[in-house]
Length: 271
Length: 254
Image: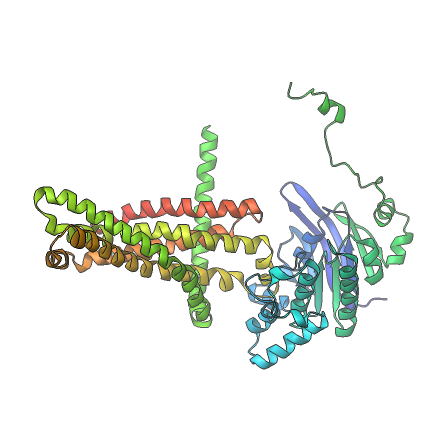
């Protein structure tokens, strides 16, 4: 049973439109403290958009997003930045600052927000880099790193302020199996060792099922299913089955909406 | 068609308004950036200013030289070649110094500012800063804006001085204008108010050129094409703005 104090983030009746397209329609979900929560869904369902809404890089049209009971869309600039210090976010491509070395990237939040001395900053940064296995790469520049390494550096940077909540945007996309395994283990280890909560956006069903405590499957603007990886595997809903088992046919159409094929090829239009 | 013109007009007014708000936002953050992040500003003065010095000096030398040549060949028809110094000084200090420096600045430093900020946007670096509770306006945009705005008057001064040397080389060393007449007449005729006019222009152009560069970069569409377009627009918009403003300032000052 989850009690009110276990609820970290609560999304209520979230509605968000971009242009004429409604991305979320009355979406509800709750994220429990201490869990690794996965947000899954077919490409283009707005998973990344949801993360940007939760961190208020975007503002919802309707509905509330409560972090520890506080509606983040009501926060002023200062309070929002205070709130964001509790978040660590790993962007899809790492988003490292290309002008700075690996060391300076990880040190960046410390230099911006604290008055710690050089020695202490050095200790903290090297500890975090060691945790992701890249202490030896401290002097390298972001351009010299492979995709997997860049993401690990970004993870070290996301952790350096000891956040309560780590957010991963597609952490497995485009990685080789070894790097992927490393990141999967890191996600779990960071979550449990530091006693934080993690949110992962991904469509890698296999990887997610090994690491997530709870998953939400988003489709057509709402939560299509939620539960532990096992529960999702056994779910009977067609959307869930199609997604989890990677089937081409099902409610999620392979073809994007298009005019009639025959009509288009045989040139009824544009004659 | 009227509808298109109307739409374009509305779009222009809207962009112009947004640009003004953006400018106010930069000004709002300027004092705290100066106090708390002075080193970043110095770094950007170096990035925008120091790297432009060579191109400014080379161009200044040749603009001055050609002015000296033209002035001499025309003035000598009236046996007034001694006033070559006056002519070149007026042209350089009041007009060509600020204007050509601003155009060169847009091409050299403005484009690099715009593409740098645009690429940071395209690669999520600005969003990453936001998520680290660091305001990218304060950390990235304002220091670059100030760096550019501070550099421009300094570059303009260098341009004008080197230009005068170029004119001296051509007129005095090659064409045998009397060196005393060249410099003395210039000093006697050129007044402080003329120099002020050049300074006012260079300050205004510095603010405008830097503002346009950081604005275009910050609002670039986050794709390769978008950043490319932002870079091009920086040069085009700056050139137009500088030449229009040059006329307006001259009209007001005279």
